[in-house]
Length: 322
Image (cartoon, rainbow, N blue to C red; front, side):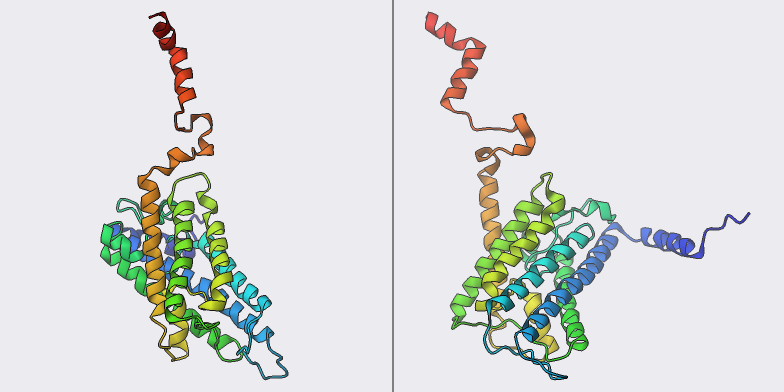
């Protein structure tokens, strides 16, 4: 009887042994880079493709003539684009959050514990945290990890834009531009506010430890969807430097407002960090006890509860007798 394992199993076993010989930090960087590259490509591919469909469907296209330029935006088009980005992020973040954290955004990146092994089960949503730049500055991740994630997310966005441009008819029309008479100052502030809302959602749903961590990608996707409902019309709804940079490279056209989609999201991420640090330093758990802890949840003592507690210990009785 032949007990030799199949060739595929032999190859898998040999590859696994080879990778285990790598230093832990190298394996961790490798896992993060692979996960972020594939995840960013997948997330933005479906988001860009959905945007193209929304643009084409908003025009009268006959025969082989496909027009992706829209003369006037309409609610159905804006809703379709928002859903494309929100649902694509939710699905892909849920898939990749155990591999790399799955945020696909240079303004927001996953945090890995220095002691964690590169096994998929050790890379969980509880390790999602601050902006890439902020994490490097506060020492949450190493500068090398931050640089690697930043670069690979940009590369993933470029690849996604190139794939969409190659696969679908019509010119690629997914670039972020200011609309509705939005000024540069307004554009920066809008991007900052929308990004801050998204990043803070990530902090509270994924970075904070609770029993609902596993479903955090759904809330994060809905957060992006809500932000896109506002942002697509006024700024294009970037919230992500890579999302704006990728299409610009693919169509070989960099607008003078490209910097807005870097400054705005990064400023918004830093603002979200400040809010998160503030509520954590104020111990928000004491203001609103965690219902998941049940009766054991901590609560703020009131005058009545203190009196009842003293009565139970017999302190009030002794005071009255005096």
